[in-house]
Length: 392
Image (cartoon, rainbow, N blue to C red; front, side, top):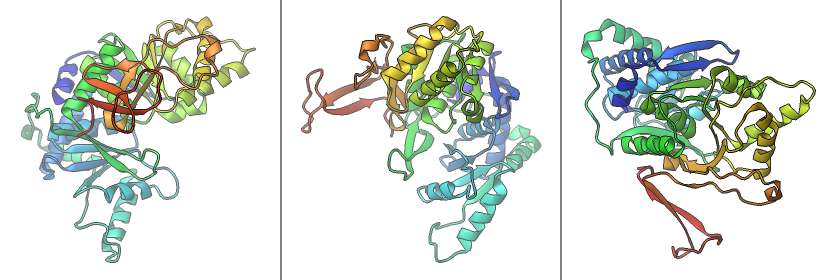
């Protein structure tokens, strides 16, 4: 992964960040590399050892990506974790800390005071028994300052290549239980997933992708950030609040930036359709002909919702084949099957199922009965997956 970032840092491709109020910040891959190497120096000087689990608590995507890659360059393992809003922002973090062995927390100045107070309170409470040793809290500003003071301690060339089975990321997912679980993903898991995503969906260096889901989500992080690093293409990262406030902003941005690939869970397609329908007397001037691929996954795909979305937007140049239902999960390092055969036939609206396609290279699937016997097509059974993207 570090080699991929080093390569793309030699190109002119960029990351466009759009905040909740629509403000644009442009981050070149060279800037990301430089920032990440400084943070890696800071981690090294702070004594953070290879393999240390580092929970990331960053408010801004620009900082999150810099720290994530700083961890990878340093050899510690980033654990991206979306900061929790509300009155008790540290509660989910401490649930996660209970899972991990001797983690550290990397936070920005906005979040670190509340985290520090809660860490001190919990670690002074002898009755809690939560943590066997003190948990280190390092701030982004501290790491950057350390790195700036000692630039000679970290090479500007790509770091030594890790083994394919070395841990690269640890993602926290609650699934349907509400209890966090740690998903260990290796460098090989991530690389095969990125290759499969790009190959299956015909993506390359000239594409421009857009993601507006949190980067702690496996699909956002692997399919719509790390894959772009490998491809050397530009990407747009949008605060989810900007889209949820007005779902049609998603289409505005696709038109403005000439986006070729994007994704969202099924609910977002319904939100857009509702807004388009409500504004029938205010036609828009979108040109969506640039868009070749729209992933629909991370929750059940509803065929009727997707057909309505396509039918409303085909007049704006959207290709009838643009939406691609798919399936995957954190445990398989994001999407492992993608379909390019979604049907506009409205007679299928009442169907219970939508085809989600065929597997990416390096992954195979089968449907079996309770004794692991392979079932014939059209028979309901258990899904089994094996391959190079399956979690460690």
